[in-house]
Amino acid sequence: MADLSINFCGIKAPNPFWLASAPPTDKAYNVIRAFEAGWGGVVWKTLGEDPPAVNVSSRYSAIYGKNREVIGFNNIELITDRSLELNLQEITAVKKAWPDRAIVVSLMLPCEEAAWAAILPKVEATGADGIELNFGCPHGMPERGMGSAVGQVPEYVEQVTAWCKKHTRLPVIVKLTPNITDIRRPARAAKAGGADAVSLINTINSITSLDLDKMVAFPNVGGASTHGGYCGPAVKPVALNMVAEIARDPETRGLPISGIGGIGNWKDAAEFIALGAGCVQVCTAAMLHGFRIVQEMKDGLSRWMDSKGYETLDDFMGKAVANTTDWKYLDMNYKSIAHISQDDCIKCGRCYVACEDTSHQSIFQLVDEATGTRTYKVNEEECVGCNLCEITCPVQGCITMVAVPTGKPYMNWTQDPRNPRAEIKETA
Image (cartoon, rainbow, N blue to C red):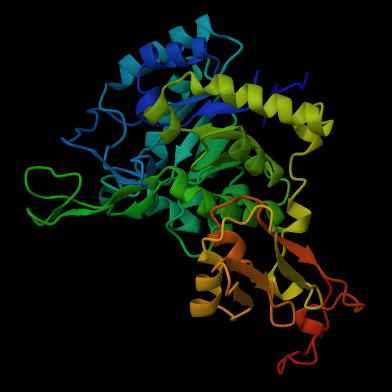
């Protein structure tokens, strides 16, 4: 049986599945239920100075799939609306009762060293395992000079991180905002400030949809609305890319990463870990399905690891990073073409329509004049291997991409004679 235990920047936990700082970690009641269900750790919902924040009603909205499954989730909730003293008391009690689980405390304060110096000893006294600096919240708090207003300025990220390293012995995790052009810049700043790790992504600025009768976006707060933070399955591709950018950046390579964004099952978690994450944080999936989903996550990850011969997470952590590169280093001489399995084809013609209308006209539609039966076949001479047909096919595995030997050596764009601006010949 695979060992799922972790030591993330000095923080130990029985498994890599943590609940992210959000409504599910708002109070002791929730956190205890989460630990009883099997979560390896939590990041306690963001604490701030007293008086606590005041939230509005309503707070959430969503984007739905065909069967009303939630594919994107939006919220305009702020940091904790409970007093600092009450939160600290509950953190102390829960950590004492669950010493083997990771408890990281999320913090958000003004960019004043005195404010951080005052709160950090109080957090440390709870017995918590670490702190997470919330530099990502995109709504409400930025207007007050906090959240993503800090995370979007690398100089502020470095400065506040350095203050925290100065005033606490706890591991410092910096939570990064995705609402920025280049995620590497704040990650580098966090490292320069002494961060023990980074976590990402926080939520993305968004308006999910509008009520066209009332002409107001959701969520509706008394006839008005605002942008909120977008999360859920739809943000996973953005999160994976940003995690990979930090993992393969020479300046931040080796910096521990806590992966966040659209994680809803064991496979999602495995993908983040393969791109360098040392643990993963979950929010939306838990809010939609409850805390017991962690059992399937742990079981699925363990079984997959057993099937691959991975005994610990370290055996595959970051294994995909070396295979993630810049476009210019991809092999221009590699070629693949589509293959349609006639045994699996249901003759719907979706691949043909997609290719004929919007791609490279590389699929023949053959009609038997006697029976009217349609058959679809790839024109191998014209196929460019874009794999649009594979994506549009409703039958998984019916269309596959097959590598075709070209007899040509590896050649990237910097080496390609067709590149009119090639000056430096580079290798990946």
